Image 1 (spheres, one colour):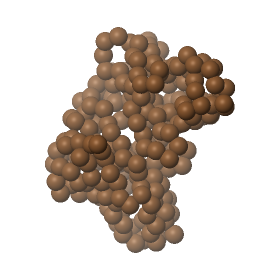
Image 2 (image 1 turned 45 degrees about the vertical axis):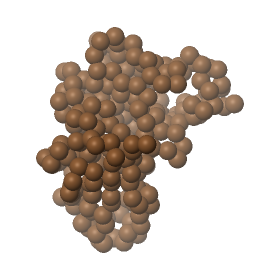
Image 3 (image 1 turned 180 degrees about the vertical axis):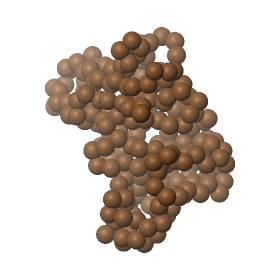
Image 4 (image 1 turned 90 degrees about the horizontal axis):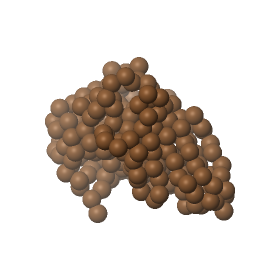
Length: 115
Length: 111
């Protein structure tokens, strides 16, 4: 069965530290890849997405992610986090390259940024 | 602002008492989804409508049903809620199978 793994359950950083959240998926075919963010008390929002083309994707609020097909990975990065980045981050995969509706989520990583 | 709206935000029901959760959207998207998210777990797709076509996930229990009377509205019916059905229920929409836009969710408590 297809699955998405997020390696870190809870990450605690100080402001200005660099961030990298890991995401690996298991699906051998074409995929669309997403990172969603959920700020405290708010709904899931799209941070960035990869469908095709340049494997380095830039999203909102200074986030970026790199798709490495050979490693089945789509890690999220930010060079310098802010207190306002405190949130839960979900990696998600749409198997079949968008021909199906099934968006498979990872379990999420809680990011706490200390001021 | 175009958005996905879920009502109510919090729902309390009794064991075995049917409950209906509501989702509406102003995005005019043709696909609507229902997810279940339990504490500290990933959202799990229950089913989705592509236009009027209903697509059920293979492991979604029969206890969960859905209706989509028109493009804007979609309902989740839980016929006989059990304690294990307590969760956050998320509605999402998309234009075809592109990026999904989520509502704020309804937290269901089963007593």
